[in-house]
Amino acid sequence: MQPIDIALIVGSAVLVIGIVVYLIVQKKKGKTGCGCGCQGCPHAGVCGVGKDDKNPEEDTHV
Image 1 (tube, rainbow, N blue to C red):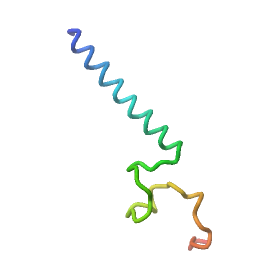
Image 2: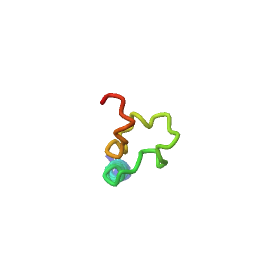
Image 3: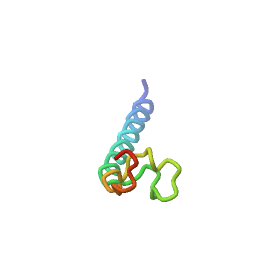
Image 4: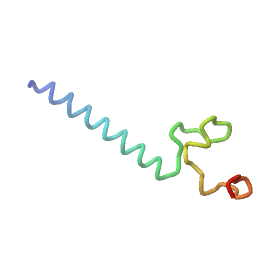
């Protein structure tokens, strides 16, 4: 392998690890994956964000 190949592999690995760390930090902060709120989102019921804040009166399984 040439030095440029090693540099590209290391650079790609750093990029992937950086993205994974960023997503983990955003999830721990309670941010959504798309960066917008759940208001009007067609996937709001399945993303899992804000389940603790759900109004118990809205729960139909009680």
